[in-house]
Length: 314
Image (cartoon, rainbow, N blue to C red; front, top):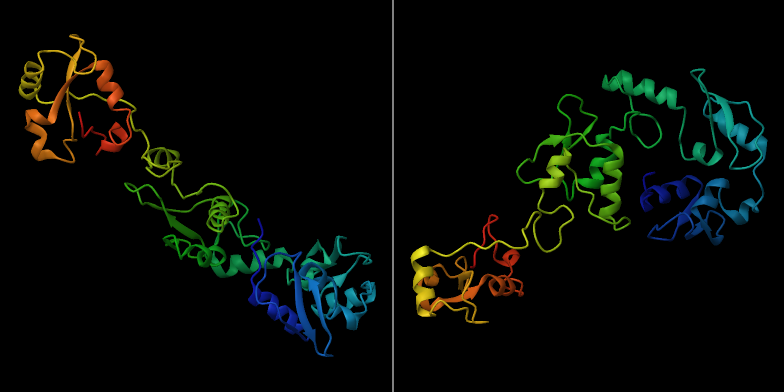
């Protein structure tokens, strides 16, 4: 997924073509951007269309670009254009100043996207990396994200750093609280996380160093409760207290009158009220069926009372 443009970059491109950008926020390439050119023409244009023109649409007359003009732009950068220009979607073959052959479109060239082979060679000479990042999007062929490309989009909410062994590569911390290991994520994982933070994609897409950490993480795909909560777990109260409660209630379930499978239940959770946990008046005798039903009620569910995977109320 390509990096989203920012208004600062677009403003700079308008100024390069002697136009003053009036719009203060960039949304997408279909948005109408208002501007004033050097000749005082006030107009609006989409970013996609602006890239195809040589400046103000009124000054330029909305004329189609000519092969002569495009060829001259390539030659100004030291490139030799070997294809006759027809439209902005066409692939244009070229030879770069270092005699590398390649192809690109006119909008890409106007966006300063140059020869990828030259860029890879530059990175090899300056970073020493074996897997050199490609020119488009700033990512490697193996899907390894670059620090300079993604760090500034993540550092406001994630722990990021440069890889100690290869400084141009991005490292992040594992989300799992018991791990927190530094690792290098895949490029698509970084891009998905950024889109989630922007609200453009469903899910959190948090960083995990392994599937095991993802499964063990309390926040992975969880909303109200941590992962692996057991729906039911009955832990009998202290045996001495349980005996006293059952004797007081004549060994009868106080809900249905049953005399089988009897259990003692705390009115208030042991976790929330430990002082009253040994008080007979804080307990009641219930059969297993009704004890289970009581713990289905909101506020008394084992998920609500659970602490460190133990039931707080019985």
